[in-house]
Amino acid sequence: MLEVLKPYIKEIDTPLDVKLEIPHLAYIEAKKKNPKILMFTNPVDGDKKFDIPVVMNIFANDEVVERIFGKNLDFIAKEIEELIKMKPPKTLSEKLKAFGKLFAIKNTIPKTVKSGECQYHIYQGELAKLSNLPILKTWEKDGGKFITMGQVYTKSLDGSVRNVGMYRLQIYDDKRLGLHWQIHKDSAHLFWEYKKANKKMPVSIAIGGDPLWTWCATAPMPPGIFEVMLYGFIRGKNPKLVKCISNDLEVPADADIVIEGYCDPREMEIEGMFGDHTGYYTLKKPFPVMHVEAITTKKNPVFYATVVGKPPLEDKYMGYATERIFLPLLKTTAPDLIDYAMPENGVFHNLILCKIAPRYPGHSMQIMHSLWGVGQMSFVKHAIFVGEDAPELRDYENLIRYILNNFDSKNILISKGIVDELDHSSVEELVGGKLGIDISEKCKVKNENCIILNDEELLERLQSVEPLIKDVKQYMTDTKNPVCVIKFKKEKSAKEIFEKIKNFKENLRIVIFINTDEINNPYMLVWRVTNNIDALRDVWIDEIIGIDGSNKNALDGFTREWPPDVDTTPQVIEKLKKLGLIKGISEEELRKYQVL
View 1 (cartoon, rainbow, N blue to C red):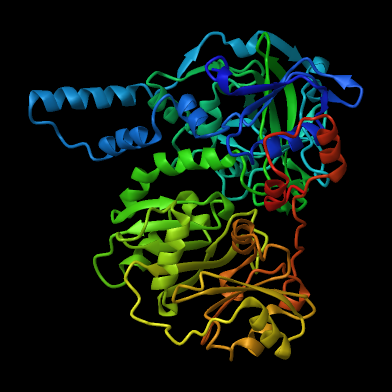
View 2 (cartoon, one colour; view 1 turned 90 degrees about the horizontal axis):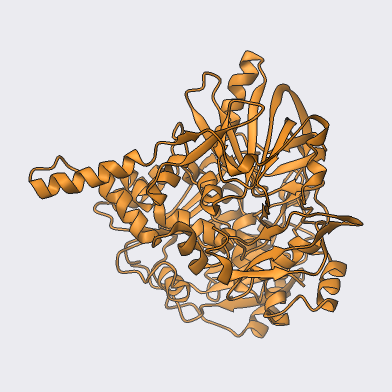
């Protein structure tokens, strides 16, 4: 597959360290307008040299993704939709067409082969060392090195259910690594079966091979359905798996590297911190431990890795593929859903935009609740629903204007439900607020009395009642519901400041509070605010709307530990600049995405 992607691969021959240097350069590459796949041919760890190249940003851009899938994403979605809606055939032509569709299902069944490329080299016992692999440490505050693109294969205690997921894996030493199985994930559910029975659980990690395996490991398939079946459906051929050397799991025969072993359900160890895809570090917490029994590789393997942190990153393109392909399945639970989008600066589970065709009062709320009850959609914190007449969901400029011109606070729904384990802002871990906004019917309320002042004059007036306000920036002042962003010094809670300024109702409609530096950076402002709010605590509906997007602490009654931002290490950026490796991106863009 790398041969097919060769036109999109940029080789970096300069020796770079697996600790910070390689991932920092990949982090910058992913933020370019036309990112490339990077192959680091000379990875090092201090004085140690590796003979295995590191490949990063494998899902580099839309064109690369289409090459990996081998088809247009919407075409794959259409194939799935036709299967879902398939009716008993009546004519000969309908029967032949139905036979073709059923044959596609036959291709989803995995095929076990006797040998695979992934077992050209076999290392067992003392020879199986994780330190022989060019595993990365991405961020300065990370708890150590992490495998970030591993396909983690497991199965149920009785063998009837097989699963693959993509989880981060912290390296403790040559023989042990941490399995970051979040409580809601399928692998965690299988783990509890072994824990209850007090039996060791076999685990195998595949790295590399056809990049489509990696995407399938992230696919939100219904529980109990083996994700590699999706690989067979997309490729149009049976997935080829090979039995592992030291356990009875099966992995892709073409994987570059396979790490085999087991976890003892009685053993847990602290994992983290880790700079995650939310753009914040996830904090230390105990997770299961995998013991390594064997490592196998191709004749000439490469090591796939990804970098996560503040958007935009490679997961933008992986997430878009998931969004397109799984639309037909979402429509089975919400038939009046026309389309949806998950903007990458909302880090996917923090913000979803939906276009719907409501047929009766309350229909939008019904769809909200149905989505919040479906698989990984249940982790979505904020959902905005627009009508059929709305602009395209990725035409963000016009869509935002449409939303603000049709917004009515009466159409806000705030409820409570589960949140992603990585969410740091919820009042309690794993459970938090859900915010739904219905814009599917045109707003009858007219805010014609909103008197827009310039930013300087508005700041002066607001500071007259609250000196802790340091700056203001107004957006979309030509709409019925302009947005005012207020930066304040956090010596009191945003709620206290809101109570002081809500009397400025002739000048304000929607007010967002922050205590960070995104006031003039709308892209990162969306990232910050959607990360930082729990709707149960941070959204106030009064004569104006208040939203607290600040970092929380004891002033807010927040008792959990607040994690630090994921930030680059300045010395590493300087070294990469001096080596002439940072090209094709401006200082302005680097500052916009908070690289500098």
